[in-house]
Structures are given as structure tokens and as C-alpha cells.
Length: 511
Image 1 (cartoon, rainbow, N blue to C red):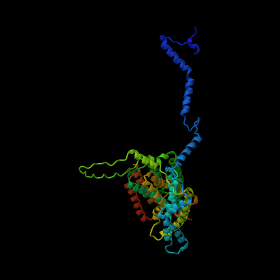
Image 2: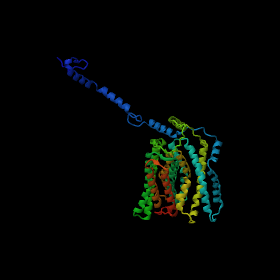
Image 3: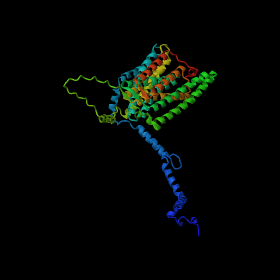
Image 4: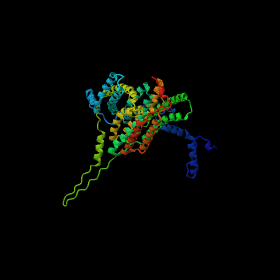
């Protein structure tokens, strides 16, 4: 008699009697164990294929088509405006809007006046440079306002995050132009002081005015705490990049020539690293974590509580009526209606781009006369070159950002205000300063990251104060007043500070 276990499973008899339940169960489990491995493996492979990420192929390599589609989708969202846009106006209506934009357009008359003084007045004239500087200074103010107007029209047509980046970038156009012209003219001390002054102006004056103006309407305004902490980290890195060359200067025991050569090499290397950090910051802000920079993620703003009205005395026999309160659905309907409102552009795209080009050219030419007249202005001894670079030039360059940031903060768009003010400071610290240092390296100008020690300390204190102010994710008018008062204190001290060149590198620049 043959052993039943040695027969094939198809011909093997099954035990079905109730007396052999235990042996039947064991035999059935044995059969299942022998005959079912392949189907189980197939099922597990099918599940793993279903769980595989959509951006990768079966070999584990990322799919470039799907990666590009994700970038394209993020770009589409970034370019989508927040509100619906009304039809663009005609060319004549756009030009009319430029003329009637602001009363500051009356100051455009100072542009031909500054140019005429530059060409007409002889070099022997006593107050020639002072007059040219004053009228050029006044001429750049309306140009910065027109630049802000054109930037707002472009920002209206894109998303909020890209709008903040546009405002910060085009708002720094004046500072970048002035810095390049001063670099060409070997005014390296003016280059350094104007860039540090731009950071101080944006962090203390512009941000303080935003908090103060918004605090007059709202008792408390909220913003993204994660984004503000990230901005604080980036500003801290920029301060470290400025302080380390100063520490190197005061610590290294080298000859003057060796120290100058080493500081230049350190500055060039750090500048390239800062440019790389700024590129990563743009990817983070625009693509990977764009939701952190939107107002929808804020904790909300709180308006001032209305004072309770005194109760009127009740006349005996009179009927008391209560004021009807609006229903919640009416409030929601009103908010929905405000969200669906169309935003009316004042200029069409061709006129906006044309205005940007014309204003940039006028700023470049006028800034040329402004930089040329700085030496003659400071030689009189009335005002120092340090005060001109760190206070006066940044105020002119940041005029556009002042108007934009304060306007949107009153409209409870504090994330956009911070994106303009703090984002502009980050852009100057991580892009403009290393870019100018790299450009000076190419042009043979000995521009370094070794700033004046007093400027470096002032920049450190400004960043430290802003970090304390924004660490709770809320703002009020008192915090704005604190920032503005700190800026006034620094301006007062820089009025008496003469400035210095610690390593003597800047003085070696020759045209």
C-alpha cells in the first residue's frame, strides 16, 4: 500500500470525517503551504507596484517628465493672481494713470535741473557739488515712486509670493545701480555703507512703519511664524558673513600685504557661498514651501474693540426696541463678495514694461551725477561720507518699498509687507552684497566683506532686535515704534561717526 503523502496533491485523498478533524486541518494547511507561495509573491509584488511613488520608475530612478510637470504646476500656481483682473486699459489711459499717480510726479522737474547743473556749472563754482547732489537726490525720489507704481502693476498679475519677490527685487534696483556706479568710481566706502544702510533701513524703518501703520487699525496682526524664523536664520547667516572677516582682521598676526590678500580671498569665497544660499532660498520660497509665505497661513488679525454705548434711560410706558444684529450668513456673504471682487489694473503690460525701462535709465544717469558729487559735498566738512552712504542714499533707494509695504500692511496683508521689507534685506545681504563683491573681483576692485566695525555692530544689533520682535508671530504699533526709534538712534550716532577702513584695502582702489 502506497503512502498517501507521497502521491500528488491532485490525487491525494482528503480526510473528511468528523473523527479526523485535527489531521484534516493539518493536512489542509500543509497543502496550502506547499501550493501557494507563487500566488502570494505575485500579490505582494502587485501591492508594491501600487505603493511605488508616482514620480519614480520601476528601477527607482525619478521620472523627469513627472518632475517637470510638478515644476510646471508650481509655476502655474505661482503666476496665478489672487483676485480676478478686469480688462487692461488702453495706452492713453495708462499714460494718464502714470501722470496722475502721485503728487510726487511734480518733483520730476528736478531731473532736468540736476542734469543742467551738472553740465552748465563750471568746476570752479563754490557750491557746485552740493547743488548737484541736492537736486539729484530730489530727482531720484519720484523715480523710485514710479518704479514702485510699475512694480505694483506687475505684482497684481502674479501670485502673492512672487509679488513679494518682485517688490523686493525691483525695490532694490536703485541701490544696485548706485552701488555699481560707486564701484566703477572706486567709492568703495560708499558702496559698503550704502548696502549696510539699506539693510538697516529695511529692517528698522520700513518694517517699523509697517507694524506701526497696521497697528493703528488693528490691535494685533499675525504672520507666519515659520517663515519669520527662517528669515531670521538667513539674516543671522549674513551677519556672520560680515563679522567673520572683522574677527579675522583683529585676530590674525600677519603683515599688511598678507592680511589684505587673505581677506580678499576669504571675501571672494564667502561671496560665492552666499550666492548659492540665496539660490536655495528662492527655490524654497517659490516652489518647495511656497505655502509658508501666504497670508492664508497666518494666525489672523484682531481689530480694536468698540466702546460700549451707554444705556439710554427708559421712559415709563415706552417700548424698548433692540438693534437688529446682522446674521452670520450676511457676514460670510460679504466676505465672499469681497474676495470675488475684480482688481482693476491702471496700466497694460507694454506700458508697464516701458515705464520700468525708462525709469531705470533715468535712475542710472541721475545716480551718476549723484555719486560724482559726493566727494565735493563731504569735503566741506558739513556732512560725512559715512552718513551720506548709510542714511541718505538708502532712504532714497527704499522710498518705493516704504510706500508699498506700508500700504499693504494697512490692508491687513502683513505677509506681503514682511516679504517686501525683510525679503529686501535678505536679498541685499545674500545677493546684492556678494554680487557686488564678485563684480569688483572681476573688475579688479579690492572690495571685501570686511566692513567698518561700527557698521557691522549696528547691523548685528538691528538683526538681533528684529529677531526678538518677530519671534511671537504677532505685531502691534509699539513694536513698530521701537524699530523706528532704534533707526533714529543709529542715524544720530552715524551723523558724528567719521567712518574707517580697518585693513586699508579700500584705499588701494584706483580708477
